[in-house]
Image 1 (cartoon, rainbow, N blue to C red):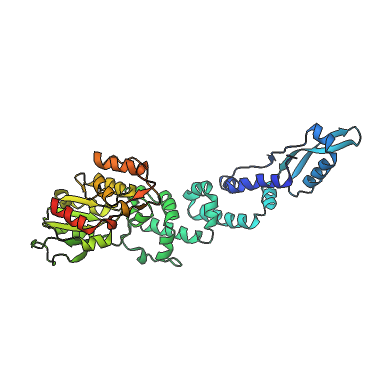
Image 2: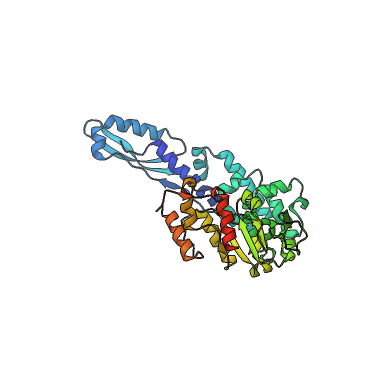
Length: 391
């Protein structure tokens, strides 16, 4: 029978918990109770034809603790007058908590609510919106508030996270909780203490004025005759981004490749450098002014993500040219095709017409299902021939 059982009533109260509604009401000072629950009762026909089942159903509901039943009279032609539930109520927050057995969780939440009210009342709105997230962090909450208070006292400190001196807090704790700290600090700190252009956990240090480990750029000088660089041709060099930006070798051509072995094996080419790429991360190159005056050739995998990375790079340097990411190369190495695990399907506005046609064929699976040609699967003689022909 499709009647509301005791487990169904308990599940309705559990949903108040699972949605955070019950805890949020404690933060906002709202009253959810008395709360009438949905109760589907037997119809008159069912009560007459399944009277024994109805009696069991009534007994089950009456035995349910912390739930008040409203009863109405039902008259049966054989069994006479009987009382049947017509409504079910949870009268208080205490009844709700007891019914779903959340007393311990509520005690922990009320403790962090009291602490937040005392120490960081501006965070109460977040606490009301994300009470279950806060509860999951109950053991760490005091230390999180310590970090918030420290940054309020030391806005944009200009030190490394390792140098933050808070009792019981170490840099690994801060790093592990950057996601929640971003949410809290964006509320608790004044706007001028936040670098709004830096977003995401990976830019946490920049957003709140900490020093960050320098971004590094790995490159090789491919030009044996090029004397402006103090390294032997082909040497594998790594510089921090700031030093690389000051380098300005006056080299006319840059290659960027995503595969490390391709980077190391890239042949010597007149007037050129090769940079080991960083997938979607080209922020470190964005402000290197001298790159604007170089021809830049990007060599990535022939798959949807390879073209997406090319599109992103070209959004920063609109003169980027692709290298060996064409249909001719793709078809020449059919025996080396593989599968791309998860394609990107978004439109890529910065591709050329020919690149866009290849990308659409891959994205729409016109050549094969999730087709890809990784750059390291292209024959090396093909690479040398392409460099000799064009450079």
